[in-house]
Image (cartoon, rainbow, N blue to C red; front, side, top):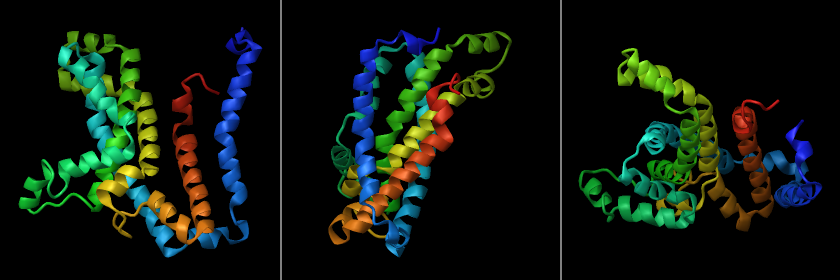
Length: 264
């Protein structure tokens, strides 16, 4: 029997209300768009530059999240050390932090007078208010999404296959590449898609740590914020464009992974 038939009928009422609550603002945005001039509103030089920068930095931050997040997720899932359990809330803290607070934290860590930034500045390396700062801000807020997704996949997969491979004489590095990573591919895809989508929409941490320099740090969310005052019609059109791009990423690349292997 399908699990859907076991649900009480009243459950569908709050589920429908939640769906309407999420969908109604998006429908209202689409209704507000000046459709006859939609293309001209989104194809200005500043808008195209902001969109391209958003895609580039989101891709770069997702790559950083994968490189750092896969080991972090496996350590959290497999390690029994007490210090790892204590560090888990710290690693996932950006999930609940206001993005502006994250930007301030990055500024005081990597800014010109920051904890680490002052030494980098002495060495001639400047992080804040650069494209690198955009990638760092996006990575800071999106990394926990990949970690928590991949950690769940690692816990579900268990470690039996790794143990068998080790007993057959495989070295730890071989087990990592030949056994562990292939098992985690579905969770890795889901986490990477979520991280990319989160990075694409990042605003607060980017504005605080990287600023809004056209062609350098002004991503599409920042362009929308600026256009909201100068050209509201352009802001609405760009908002819909950002929603469409994020939806394509999630639905086109990650829908099967996000809904599970049994989705049809």
